[in-house]
Length: 265
Image 1: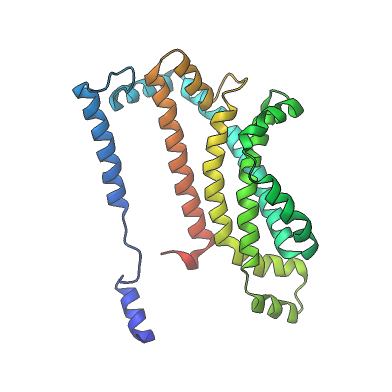
Image 2: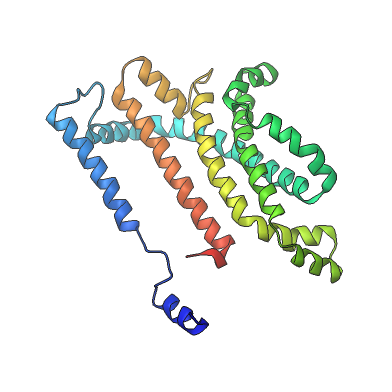
């Protein structure tokens, strides 16, 4: 197949990714409809599975009273701080370990030894070190984001084209210029892959952290509602977590298309 034919097929959309947004929307609507049907038929008691309309009404009441905003703002504050700290440190460490031989010799075994440790298992130790306040919650989220970011950034740096690096050095580029203009652009796809992994991990650790010694947050809402058997309110918390996951996925996708336009399908 010659270049002209490839260009024609690409313009006609043959080589482009099909747009499945309608199918995704239909799948989501179908899931909610099935959920409502099961609730209306009564196969599952409302105590165990409230209807979507009931969850929507409960969510609206919590929004009017301001309860949702209290929990959501507390969770977002912890989530954004932990994600920013862990993501920033992960990129710095990943670039350093991937670019400098001495840092790679020291950092690779340390990351390999500490990465398999479940981060939630470190929460009691973080509470002992940092106390029961916000610091321990933010720290465990930051740890969960740090490792996928560091590992993916390291992999992205190692995949950079050596010819481009040599060419930049030959033209007189210093180390910082090579990192900024060659290494980081080459590593961006892997960095965004780490961001996606870190976003999911951050949500999991957020919920776990907010179940210990807090009075607000989505994790607290889910735990408290479960303890008093308020299933509808519990489902509101789960829906909020799902929406946060969807928003983070969509936001990172948009940011990736802006930062790496040549990879947009």
